[in-house]
Length: 500
Ligand SMILES: *Cc1c(COP(=O)(O)O)cnc(C)c1O
Image 1: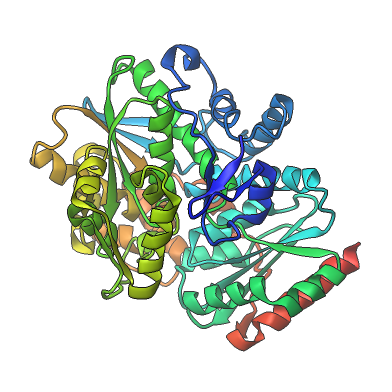
Image 2 (image 1 turned 90 degrees about the vertical axis):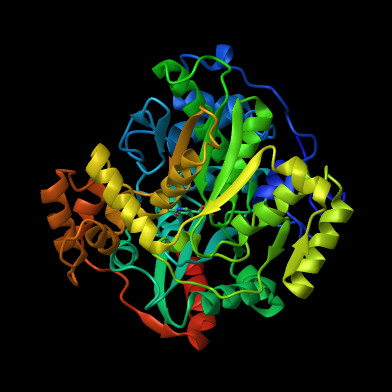
């Protein structure tokens, strides 16, 4: 299977796409011909998560042998990396509502599902491309991605990772997770600046001839771990497939019966994987895109106009505080019926005016499969409180947004009696201040004090990754000026070269 750009007919191998991330024309890589309707319950029944992952990935990463893929999958999903041997367990709330728990990985966020496998795909691709420089992953993070990438790449041979986060822009728990990161190939630094400063600096590094030449001389190649890479996107298809199998096995639906999914959405990577699962044969009815107050996508699914010219809000679901969803372009490619010229024009409109729109016919067609919805922060806290009190189930703020959107849909009868699955993207204990507020518990400066309170009320034990974190020493306490980021990158390049 080769991969083509969403903006032209540029076409490359899977290993090239893995290593380079973005197409040369600025587009994103999509399968040259999508494997439609290749999965069925009959073939999947009784399979483990790992076997389902292989059934999915065998259609995309055809550059590796089945044996190679299976080995990578076994390294990514096991009892060292996930706290539940089902990897993505399904929790039944009611006869017509289930929750797919995507937060049992090492950092308690759904990004672990992709970032546990991605380093193996990347290093295997590096070998195939006969690239013998050491990889240095550079990442700017506003929270979950940085930690999940650090855990994924920690001590993976041939790779190194450096993460920058805004010193005042992440939660206290997220800060500790990064400052206490272990591994011999990692480096973390806070910067005095915001997420955009960190992000735009890294963009300049990736395109700077001088910095790239310096790294090249030292045997180092820059790469990124962001969610547009095919190595992050396609592993996510597997949990939609495993969720379907679990639903049938639990008796929530019968074989082939349609169900809806609601996905807390930021960069559109998670929900896009659901769309791909549907194309491959999983009987998903509607894919519902849930947003917080930054509701660009909800408005798009209502009106067909994607308009970024609006205020930006900082909310209690920070991983969804996004105005330009990086994976949305891939969705547009299918809306345009794989017409790359049309996508290129839409992207040009977005770049030049911050706005693009699809036709009335296109909107009608896409609304047969997609819907949007949103709720604000007050509703999010009310949902956390309600679901805890009525069902004894504690939601994180991102998942609560999806849940609230589902409640509104149900009230309006939009689910038409179909079973609904909510994709739960984080463990609630990653966000102690919001949970304390929702449950009317006291706030504290120490997130572990808040978790102790939440735990004594709910009886939910502290998950091991957080319990372990409490007593680990801080390794990375640097905060640097944003002007010094380049110096920090070059000095890490020197340190990598010194290890050779
Ligand atoms: C990253 C993230 C999201 C958004 O996922 P996308 O694939 O970017 O849409 C939602 N919730 C949590 C907790 C996340 O970490």
